[in-house]
Amino acid sequence: MSNLENKTLLFKISPPLVAGVTAFTLAIFKLFAGLFSGSVAVMASAIDSMLDSIISGLNYAALKKSKDKASSKFNYGLSKLEALMAFLEGLFVLGVGIFIFYSSIKSMFYSQNQIKTDIAILVMVISALTTGLLVFYLHLQQKSSLIVKADILHYKSDFYTNIATILALIIIYFTGFVLIDSLFGIIVSVYIFVSSVKLIKEGGNILLDRAIDKNIVENIVDFIKSRNLILSYHNLKTRQSVDKAYFSIDLVFKKDISLQNAHDEGEVLINYIKNSYPNFEWDIDIHFDPVDDSAKQ
Image (tube, rainbow, N blue to C red; front, side, top):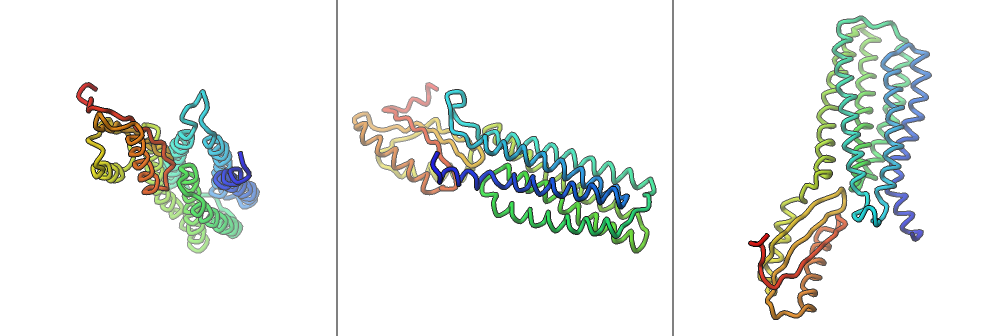
């Protein structure tokens, strides 16, 4: 692997590592603050940040491994590993959302202990600012990475949770109205639930080999129909694996066409697809047919 390829790989896999280190630092910071202030909310946030750091560490390893080239054992590479991690992470975030919802409902029926809200607010403000900057950084780095999108989801959820906790603590500080903490928790849990379901669906579609966008396929088909040497086509199949797209098709030519001319026509199609949709890494397989044998298939 060249130095340029190494730098490109490092650029792609570094966001989860940065996120993991940041989350771990926040976890330690909030753990001590939670113990000192007596705030259960801050303690819960510390545990959440610790889990985030573990997940980001796993994401870093998965993203690094998913960029491995195809081998004799894994002919198509390990790109689906990224989708698998995103799917599992979506389930984890969904579980966190359900737990927050349950805890919020439960806390409505129990009074909260006195906490040192000034210390808790300070800690959560610092945490919110740091998490907000992290989400902004991940947005800049996400490109087509599903794992980084997953990281964005749960750190964005953390950010909103931090903001909700800050607002709740401020209201409690001035009014003593502890019920507001539960209401904010319910709102945040609903947001987490909706976002995690979207991520689970996106990762699941890739794991199940969902076809690429039909508008892309229709555009490619229109181009094929515009080529005079191509009589017809059949057996068109596509699938998408994160930022890699697979496209296979059988093209029908006249029987007397030379193999060179058929090959050149195939290259024209390949170049058209790659130039039209450069955001994908394309794996294109074209089979040349002298007759349309689709009826036999």
